[in-house]
Length: 203
Image (cartoon, rainbow, N blue to C red):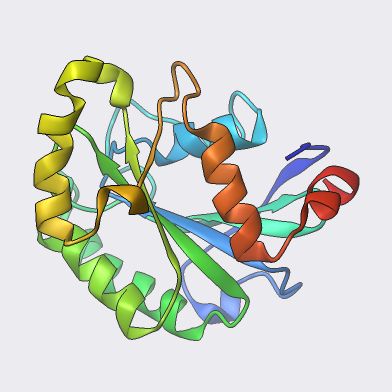
């Protein structure tokens, strides 16, 4: 994917505030501090298109980004951080579920899992919603540089067991080495319906 432009459009909390251009979209979801912002920044080759924070739980809105004036990427609120106020935690579920249920131009959701963490209830709830609404899922295991390659299998096994997904369903990603970037882009392009020509000429 050749990135010519990547711009922040707006933040939203409900359908009446979503962007109205209805470009095809792929969203990114996962626990707080799983590496969503870093993944999006690496994909679009920008250092700080999406703000990263040392404090998990900062992203509490749906953030829309227009790429190449051709499609959108959406950073969904992170979940599961203990220090986020209870009222904010309660907003997450309805906000995300409403987006997944009502956004007609959504083509897939990239779901992130930290290689060092076993998926928890919120992760599995998200997968259940995606299955319920028949939304294609692109599972990604992040931060693979945090463990040695000979330990990967052992770290990944609990993720496979918890999610019920096979190993080949996942892309492995490192923001540090950029491992997995091309693989994830290929899957995103497929979800968006972009062929090789679209990805190079329109991108």
